[in-house]
Each structure stands twice: as structure tokens, then as C-alpha cells.
Image (cartoon, rainbow over all chains, first blue to last red; front, side, top):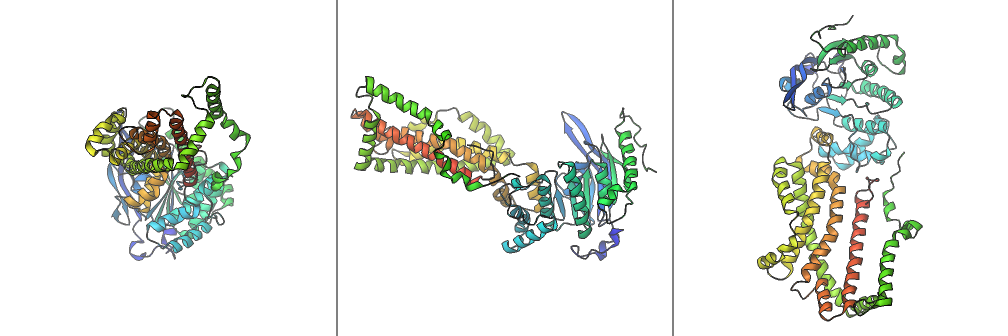
Amino acid sequence: MLSSNAAPSGATTMEAITDQPQLRLTGVRKTFHRDRKTVEALRDVSFEVPRGQFLSALGPSGCGKSTMLHIIGGFETATSGSVHLDGKPVTAPGRDRGMMFQQATLFPWKTVQANVAWPLLVDGWKRKHARERARELLATVGLSGFEHSYPAELSGGMRQRAALARTLGLAPDILLMDEPFGALDAQTRELMQEELTRIWQESQLTVIFITHDINEAVFLGDRVLVMGARPGRIIADVEIELDRPRGAHTKRDPKLVEYHNEFWDLIRQEAGPQPSGSRDAGETPS
Amino acid sequence: MANVTFPRALAPRNLLTGAALRRLLGVAALLGGWELVARLGGTRLTPTLDEIAIRVLYDIETGTLLFHAQRTLLLAFSGLAIAVVVGCAVGLLMARSRWAEAALQPLLGATYPIPRLALYPVLILLFGLGAAPKIVLVSLECLYPMALGAYVGARSVTTTQLWLARNVGASWSRTLRDVIVPAALPSMLTGLRAAAPVMLIVIVVTEMIGENRGLGYMIMLARANFEPDGVLAVVAVLAVLGFAFDRAVVLLSRVLVFWERDVRL
């Protein structure tokens, strides 16, 4: 697996932490209070992510998958349970976890390059170096030539590329992606998925990718967590055995269709006519 | 793809197009109506446009207009500057702190309908006659639109923008400077646009009371001398000033808030 390959770039202290999972969630529970009622957004979510893994979290809207990501990011706190990153509990947001939102969240008053350079400047980089690094990052995501454009001049896909470049600039250990392609049109979406696998392959980053699109989850992930709603919880945890590197050809792989059907069945059961008590039905699919 | 060309606002090209001329129709009708009345049934109380214009030129020539206008504008802009600083601070604070919002919003809401001009006698007692009470009254009056603009603007900052700042590790002051203030800027400028005419109204009214300088005083002097053309000359100058300030704020908005193409002030 990828986790055993020492990354030549980025990570520095590999030796001590290779065999322990990079990220561990233990019994994470999250409840909200709405109109005097308590809503359980997440129940007993526990899993581990080894370094370098691309983990997709798949689930219908309202299954708490975004909430889970926000808790890992440190933006929200769990009602109970814990999140550990490299053995240390997560309490607040940090640059070690680069967050990408569904909306690109670029500042409209800054050029693309200035948007990407901003986190670097906040980190105390010299203006010149930040500018150079931003240009490199933009080249990585295929946005060379758009350095001086404003976000309003870019398409949705290009904006997300810029947001990805900005997030990569944080030099994070983990990329947290909250349905980043959810607002894009179908074609752009497919292209972005292929771009992301390419960039991920080169970066060796750990990624947690939230989506409600089954094909997207399977195509991108080494592993897919399937989540159910009300309360949000993990109903299946499946390793994806599709060859790497993946690309356009993977989308025609018959195995992808098999995974698709398997997950669709799970989700169908979950969203069945009556959300009754029997919810442990599909624990480990064939 | 969208096309942002922000210095376009400065291009004077559309100044003389048909659309621009149509926009002058209302003003032309008003002036024409006045002229008609003045010429047909006019008395000394209704000087014609050319009489008013001649009076304006005369006041410029003698230097009186400049002398009084300088004083008026100095006080007015001093008051406005205070209102901008304090109003923006109050608005931003209210938007970003629940405590400040809870404490200040009812206060502003309750005091807003009070005619603050009625406080002028009190201010004179407190600060004496002269510049101070006028500056205070202008800033009090302009505070409301400025605070409201900053408040609405800072409230428009999205959760994800703030989360991004936290993810990046931006300090509180950095977030304010790089995220909140730019995001609030369009709305702050709308506040400024509302404050500018208020500023002129308040300063002129205060100068009409117990003062011996300023455009408001000029009006009272001309009235005392029974010179309606003198009164209207100052009114005309004030109209031009008010219009100029408004266009200046609009221009400033287009330059500063170039990314908001859809907002037409």
C-alpha cells in the first residue's frame, strides 16, 4: 500500500510514525439542538487512516459526513469521542490539515496568484518568495497564465483548481475535501477528478474526500467509507482494488461498475421506505 | 467568460450619450419650471436663474463664498471623518461580537429616530459656540449610516471565509484586515454615500444658528438683508457640492470595490 512508501517530498519525520495510523477517530459523536429537539448528526464514528491513503467518505445528504470533516478540521468540536492526528488530539484548525470547501472561497478582491500566496504571507513568507511559490502551485493545478486574473473571471472548475493550489500551499499532512466538485457541471467534474488523482499521486498526501457521488468516491479512493443518515454513522468500510495510476481508462473498468452497484445497494437499503430499527444489515458486502 | 475592466468607471465616454441626457430631464424640468415662474409672475422673492448665477459669480469674485465654504467644509469633513472611524469600528464590532451586538444594537435602534438636531442646544451648552458642537453633531448624525454599513458588510463575511482564515492560521487582526474589512468595504461605501448628504444638511443647519461664518451663515445673512438671490446662490452651491460628493463616493466605490461588477450605485 501507499502508506509504506516513504514520501520523498513534504513529510519529514517518517520513521517514528509509519506504523501507527496518521489519523484516528474514536467514538466520535455529535449532537445538535434544534427547536428543543436533539438531533444526532454522528453516532460512534471510529476509523483509522494510514498515511498516504485516499479515503472517500460517501453518503446521502444529511448523513453528517461534512460535520465529520469539520470535526477533523477542528472547525467544530465533537460532543464526545476524540480525533487524533499523529497521536495528538485535534482541538483547533491548523495548517497540517488543509481544508477545501464546496465553494472555492477565493477572495474576489485578490488576483488568483494573490489568493494562493495569501496563506504563505500569513505564515511570514517574503512577498517575492510567496509570489514564486504561488506561481509554482498554480502550474501544478494547470492554471499557468491565469495568475493575474480575478476569481470572477474564472470558471467554477478553475476556481476550485485555484483553491486546491492554495490548500496545497499550506503544505498540509492531510487534505480535507468537502465535496469540492459538487457544484461543478458533469464534464468539468470528471476532468477535475482525473486532475486530482494525478496531483495526489505526485504529492503522496493523505486525503479525506467527502462526496455523495458513488463513482467519484470509487474512482478517487483507495478506500470508501459508506455512511448512513439519521443518525450519521459508518455502515461500510471497503478497500477499492482498482489499479493505480488511475485515469480516464479507470472509468471504463468493469470493476468500477461492480463497486457502483454494491454501494448503490447499500445506500438504497439505507434510504429504504421505512427507516426502522434494522440498520446493521449491510456490514461487510461480498 | 466574465470581463472585468475596472478602471472603466473612470472613462468619461458615456457622459454625453442619450442615456446621460435623459437623466438630466428631471433637473432641467425643475430649473425650467422655476425660470418660467420667475419670468412670468416673478417678484423679488423669485430671482431668475441668471440672476442667481450672477450672484454666485459675484460671491466667488469677492471671495466671500470661498471663505465661508472653506469653513463649512472643514467642519463637515472633520465630523464625517470621526463618523467614518467610529462608525466603522462600532459596525465591525457589532458584527463580530455577540456581546457588542447585544449591547449596541438596541442602543442604536432606540436613538436613531431621535432628531439629533434637537440636541444642538445641549451641545452648545456642553462645547460652547464654535466648531466643536457642529463637528460633534455632524459625526453623531453620520455615525448611523456608517455603523449600519459596516455592520451589514461585516455580517456578509461567510463562515467558510472565516474558517479559511482559521485554517491558514491568520491572527485576529490579520483576518480583520485581509478578510473582514475588504468584504465589508462595498457596504461601508454605501454607508458613506448615505452619510455625505446628511453631513451637508447638518452642518448648514448648525451654521444658521448663532454663527458668523460658513455657508449656513451666508444664507442667514442674505435673508436678513432681504436678498433671495443671495440665499438661492448658496443653495445652488450646496446642490453642486452635494452632487459632487455623491459622484466622488460612487467613483471611489468603483475603484475600491472593482470586483463587485453587479453593484450599481
